[in-house]
Structure formats: structure tokens, C-alpha cells
Image 1 (tube, rainbow, N blue to C red):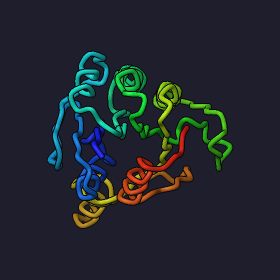
Image 2: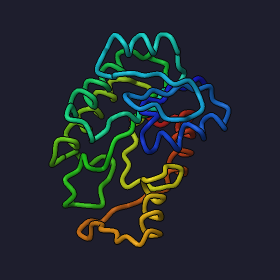
Image 3: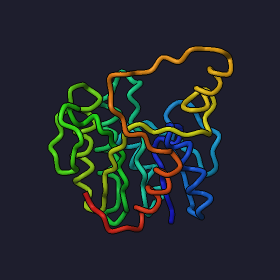
Length: 204
């Protein structure tokens, strides 16, 4: 399959892109500021620029898009997450398969465990933007949204488990939350599941 992965430099993107290439997909990935060292064609893209998004999609002509971009480390959350998703959906051919990644923080967190059909009730800006982006992605008929929680894995020095290992080896103390219930998922397992979704009939 000819794939376009937005947010190739994201934590999940750095796990997913190599696995997708190994699986035989022809792949391009986008990044916003810092180009990661990954296999495939790298495309610098600001998803807030609708014309640039349309040109990228038109040039690459993907059969499937895995939409990972949507950092919570930007001051323009609405622009990157909501407008970026809207621009992407408007640029896609109706037949193109869209895997849209979201988050469990679209829920308030006080009535867990949640079901897929539970209405979003985000309590902060990132969750509100992601909930809005889910609604924009739903305008594309051939799409499925994946809500994730705590993603962990290797592959990325200074982050995730590798970062923990390095700090512990250096004798540092790790400070983590103790007032949350999280459901972690191994990054490679999530990436494999995402690639399976490309060819499955699930919608919504």
C-alpha cells in the first residue's frame, strides 16, 4: 500500500514508520520542524497550511494515511490539531483509508473505564482539540479513530523506557505520577495494530 504518515517524528511515528517499511509499504512521512532519521520519503509539512497539505496529498497520492501529527507541545493546539486534521480530510480522496490517532483525554477521567460510545467530556485544551479533531476526521467516510493512552517502548534515546534506563543507570531518581490509573500499550504492538487496521472494515 502507498502510505502517508503524518507526524513521523512523533513517539509512535518513530516506531511505526520502520515497521511499515519492513512490511512492504511504500511510505512517505511528514515532520514539522525536526526531520527524524527514518526510512521512507521525508516531507516537511505544516498541516495548518491547507494549500501545502493539498499539494502533498496530490503529489504522493496515498492509498492510506496514518494521522499521528498533533503534538501537545505547541502553543497553537487548535491550529495544528483541529485545522490540521480538517485540511487533511479535505485533501483526501474519498477512497483513501484514514487512520486518525486521538487520545483517552477526550474523556473527563472520573468515570473510567470508558466505552467507545461514551460522549467526550474533555477537561483541558488538548483534550478539547482532540475531540474536535475526531469530529472533523469523522467527515471522511473511510476512517477509523484510535484512542490511545500511555504509549511506551524503545527505539528513542532519552525518551520513554530508554530515557528511564539511562537515568537509573546514572543513579538518578525518577519522579512519576501516583494519582492516575493508566493503561499502557507497547509502541510496536500499537504500530502493528494500526497497520492491520488499514485493511480491516472498521469505521468510526
